[in-house]
View 1 (cartoon, helix red, strand yellow):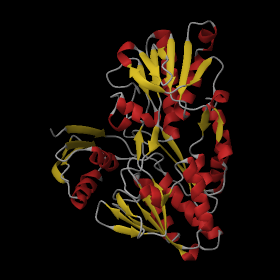
View 2 (tube, one colour):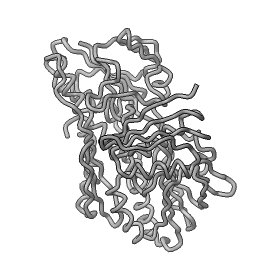
View 3 (cartoon, one colour):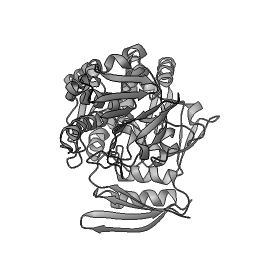
View 4 (cartoon, one colour):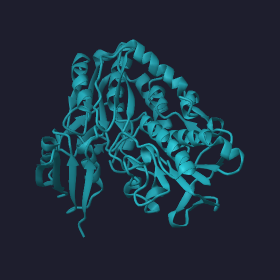
Amino acid sequence: MKILFVGGGMGGTIAANNVARRLSKEIRSGKVEITMLSATDQHWYQPGLLYVAFGKMALTDICRDQSSLLEPGIKFFVDPVEEFELKQNQVRTKAGVVHSYDMLVIATGCEAVYDEVPGLKESSETPYTRDGAVAMFKKLRDFEGGKVAVVVGVPHKCPIAPIEITFMLHEFFEKRGIRDKVQLQYTYPIARIHNIENIAKWAIPEFERMEVDYETFFNMKEVDVDNKIVHSEEGTEKEFDLLVTVPPHRGLQVIEDNNLGEAGWIPTDRYSLMMNDQDNVFALGDTTNLPISKTGSTAHFESEVIGENIASLYRTGTATREYDGKVYCFIEADRGRATNACFNYIDPPEIKAPTKSMHMLKMSYNQWYWSSARGLL
Amino acid sequence: MPEEKIVDARDTFCPGPLMELISFMKRAEIGDQLELLSTDEGSANDVPEWISKVGHELVSNEKIDDVWHIKVRKAK
C-alpha cells in the first residue's frame, strides 16, 4: 500500500509519523510505503512567530530540518505537488515526478493574503510571517508612543491570536515604561471581542483593566496609507500610528487551481476528515473547509484520528475513530500569565483566571513542540 | 448566474457562524445567496445586525428544530 502525504507542516508531519509508527513492521517488510512531499526542507513552529514579534524567541528557535522530524521509513522529497489527479490516484510534482497512491493525505495549509485589503501590506506589522515577525519587533522596540490599532482579517488562522497580541502589546509597552503614551485600540470583525463567547466574557474586564479601547463589527476595507487610517466595511475608521494586523488567510492556490476547493479550502467531512466524494483522500488542519479553528492544535488532534484510521483501514478495511472537534489553545495574557481553552463540537470552553503556571506550561510547550511534531506527545 | 450555498456552522464555537458568513461574503458575487445553519443563539441577532451595517440583504431568519436558518444575499 502506498500512503502519500502532501504537505509537511504540523498536521502532515504528525499524521505521517503516527502512521509510520503504527505500521512500522509493514514498512520494514515493504508492504507499506509512506511518502511525504513538501515545498520546503524546513519545518517551522508557526506559533513561535508571536514570540519572535515580541523579541522573546529567535527564528532559529522555531525551525528544524523537516527530515530530522520524520520517522525512519518515511520517504521525504522537497518537490511540491502541482497537479492532483484524484481519478488516477496520483499527483504530479513541480519536478514532473508522478507519485501514485492508495491513500492520500492533503495537508497543504493556508497562507496570509493581503490583496483583499488595499494598503494593508505596506501599512501594517504582523506576527504571521517570518519577515513580518522580525520587522514587527523592530517597530515595537523603536515605537515612542501614539495610537496602536489591532485589526483582524477574515478568515484567519489561530483565532486566539488577536487577544494574545493585545495582551502582549500592553505588557511590552508597560515594560518599556511607555504604556501611558500608547493608546491601544482593538477591533474585531463580529459583534463581540472574540468569537468564543466565554473568551469574550473573560477578556472584556481584562481589556478594561488594561485600558484597551475596543470596537466590534470592524472588518477591514482599505487602509489610507498616507493619512494612516483604516476604513471598515461597516463605515467606521481607525486612526493609527502603528497598525498591527492579523491578516486574512486563504488555502493554497494549488488547491484552487486543481478545483479541489473554493478559496483553497477542501470540502471535508467533519467527523471522518475524508474529502467529500472521495474514499481514499483525507484533508486536515488549515486545508479543510471545516468551520472550526485553523490552528496547530486542530491539526494535531485531527492527525491522530487520521493516523489511527489509516492504519485501521489498512489492517481491517474500516476506520475506527471520528474527529470530535477537539481543540486546545493556550491563551497568553499579561504579567507572565496565561490561561487555556479546550473545546470540541459539543462542549464550549470554560475560561479560568490566567496563572503564571499556565504561562510556564506554554513556554515549555514551545520547546516540547518538536516532540509533538514527531508524534511523541 | 447567482449561486445559492449552504454553510453548515452548527455545533461549532470557533470561528463561529458570523465569521463563516463574512468569509463567504468576501468571495461571493453580488446576488449570491447563502443559507447559514447555526446552533448559536447569538447568530439570530448578530447576523442580521452585521448584514444591516454592511448593506447586504437579509432574506429570512427562522429557527427550525433548534437550528437557525438564516438566508442572506450579497447586495453590493
